[in-house]
Each structure stands twice: as structure tokens, then as C-alpha cells.
Image (cartoon, rainbow over all chains, first blue to last red; front, side):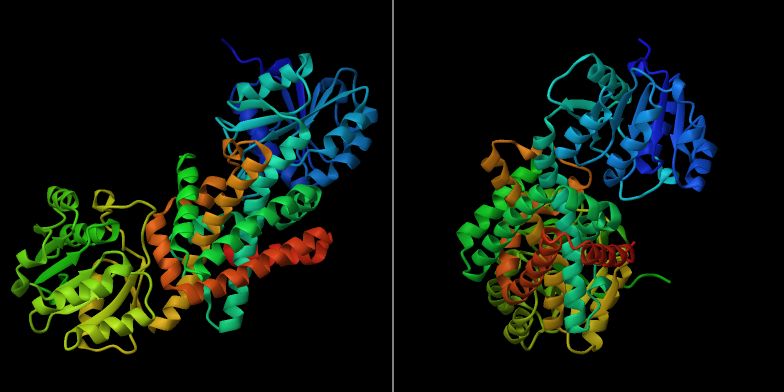
Length: 289
Length: 289
């Protein structure tokens, strides 16, 4: 059975970064038959995307886009730009166009975007995929294959099913979750680990300064893997931390509690409790494979 | 030029775990011409080591070992067993035998072992290599290749140079560092990251219980890499944390400070300071490759 990718005829991807670029490239290489249009303020990225044949046509101005040929718009710029872009593009949209995104923070933003885009349909989406690299030049074919994609909606309908088909045809495993729950879950499993990785490197910088020894000359086993995500984009992560502030602070507090608990067991040399904490964490971690 | 492996004729490896097993197997496969003897209280490990041809002869009792043929003993059991083993094996040692180890915590222990073994020479060594797996059955040929190996000594002499040659011939990059500095450095780059990984998983267990959502169903990008070291042996890490208590607590405190600083910037929405912390951490992490 052929793939139908939700039956969209023309897809506009706004923002040719790693995710937007990988989406375009994956659609092209996995048999999407419609047209792919790319927009980015950065002329060079548009050029690269065309050279890579990730997009059919590229634009740096909304005025130049053939809006009548577009029935799906995907926002793939940093999340903080979404509201501004929404207001700018709404006047251009043709009837029935669906708008979606690939942003990692939802909550209030999804509600706001749903409101702004009315009568057009906005459907929040979050592919759980990425690398610490940036830009269309690092785009990966099949980036979304076997990865979860969360549709942040309250209930499914015809439109959400079309979008679901598009992502399923790219190999993603689609799940539905309400936007608020989504933000808490990703504060826990993604935003917190990033905060921890950045803070860990920060503490080693401080310890190096304190002692005059460049600790970064001695990356122990696991240290590089462990801190790889601290190489992620500072601008993107600053925005994510601030946009998901409430949930991020909640998970940081819980983590600091765990860290203090561990510290206490070590200080008191409470072998039993220390071992129990390590064993439970290990068991849970092993269950992830 | 042939490899001489320090000119040792018979090497006894006490403890056939991942590191001891990998050392035996690597010596065998990289051209060591002397004999390799293996000791482990676990009969099954001795059997596996022989089947893998990692050792020439295996023992579960010190009485059975042909001590006259052994001029190098390597302690590769958990660090906490070292003092006990040292006392047990000292009466068997033949004149001129050198004793070393592959343990990750030094400090006072090296001084104690040097004292106990006198007139025999004890030379502390710490290969910066490993995986989160355990046991000789997971031994890796070439585990030490291009990895740092720290000799924790105050100064070099003929004996330390022989040991240095053995490790260099296995491809390790040998460095000399005094035992106290060694412990601080590895508290920072290895023990702290492990503590953080265990605590991170622990906090997600707590958050899952609090909310009734199994957060481990949603391992985001990077999460698995980030927490892989939390799958390390709880028993080994409990011991390491306690043996290196002073330095581990010091680095945990510094890390909690960094975490609180990051938390404060997010809470106050101080974009400038937040971005600066993320940028500095990223830059430092990128420098590690």
C-alpha cells in the first residue's frame, strides 16, 4: 500500500533548522508526492535546503509564497517566534489549510495558537527526535523513524488523523497527549536532563578555577556521553527553560532533593539507604534498554 | 620493535571482573609472552576466563598459586577488598615482586598499601576505561587503548617505569599524578557524574510516583545516553562514593550550587545570565570533542 502522507498537496515548512530540514528531507526521500516549500529568514539556509533537494521552492519573504498551493503549514522555528509568525501568516492562508508545528513546549502556547489561527485549525505536534546539531545542513533522513511524536490535542478528529498519517508514514509512533501533561512529561525527561548537563559542566568549570587544575583534560569513562547534551544550542534551551518555567522549576526542585538525599547517605555513610537508591535507579534505567 | 610489557615473566590478576578480565585478555591478544594467572573467589568466572583464553591458569585459593613464577600482581577486585587481600597475599610473595592495581580510588589507600606491602613495592594505577557492564564475560580486547592510565605515585623509578611500559604496550597513555590530586580529579569527572545520573533517575522515579505517570515511557532525545552510567554497578559505586567521601561531597556541593544558580536564573527570567551559563558550558563541552 502506498503512503498517502495525509493527502496534503503542498507543505510549507517555516524554519529550515535541523528539525524543519530533516522533515523536508525525509518527506522527499520517503516518497511524498506533493510539493515542499521552505521558508527561512536566513537566505543561506534556503539555498542549502534547495541544493540538498530537501525543498522544491524556498522563500525568505512571506509575500512570495504561493499560498493557494499550500494546505499544511509546519512551524519549525524556535518556539518563542510562533505567536509572531502566526499573526503574520494568518492573512495569507487559504481556506482549509491546517497549521501544525514541531516545537517542544506546548501548554498555554497551543491554546493561544488555536485561538489566533481560528477559523483555521492549529494542531500542536512534538516529534521526540533531534541531535545536538543545528541547521538544515545537518538534516537527517529518517530522523523521525521509530521515534515518538506527540500530538498535543484534547481529542482526535478528521484533521488530526491526516496529520497523524503524515507522521506515521515517516515512521513516527504517534501518541496523543493533552498539552499541559505534555509539558510536565518533557520537563522531566528532556528539559531537566539538559539543565543537569549544563549545570554539571558549569560546576566543573568552577572546580577547575578553584583548584587551578583543568579537569576537562580528564574526561572519565561515560563523561562525554553524559555531558553531550550540554553541547545543545544555548539559545534554544534558554527559551525552552523559560517557556516551560513552572514545570522545569518543579522538576529541578525534585532533582535537587534527590541529589541532597544521596549526599546525606554518603555523608552519614548509610550504606543500606545508599545502596537502595543506587539499585532502584539502576533497575529503572536498565528497563529502558 | 617488539613489545616487552615491562619484562614481567608471570602476572597474577586478582579479580576477574570487567577490568581484570579485559587486562588479561588484552595482554594475551596483544602479544604478551609471559604467563597470566587469574584468581577469583567465583569459580565460574575462573572457568569462563580460561575458556576465553584470557588466562593460562586459574585459581580460587591463594594456596594453589605458583607464587615463585609471579613477578607482578594486579589487584582488580573492588577497592574495599584491597587491604584485606594485601595482608593475605603478602606472605606468599617472592622477592622483587611488584604489586599494582586498577582501582579508581587512591588517596590514603595507596599510602596504606605501600606501607602494608613493604619491603615489596606497591604502585597504584588507575586505567580510565570501563563500560557499565560487569564480569570477565564482558571483557573487551583493547579496552585500554588510547585511554589514560594514571600512575598514582610521587615520583618515577625503575619499577614504575616497568609498569608504565606494560600499560604503554597495551596502548594506554600513561600519566603520573599524586594520589590525593588523583582522587579530587576523579571525584569531579567520574564520581560526581555517576552520582548525578543516579540522582536524576531517582528524581524521575519520585516524579512518576507523585503524578501517577510513568515518565520512563518517554525517554527524550539524549536521555538514554545521559543516564546510561546510572546502569553501573550499585555495589561498586556505593563503595567508591564512600571511599572518596571528602572529595565526592565537595564536588556534589559545587554541583548543587551550579544547579541552584541555574534554577535562580530561570525563576527570575534572567535571560542574560542564563544564556551566559549555557554558552560557557556548551563551549567547554564542545572542546572535549
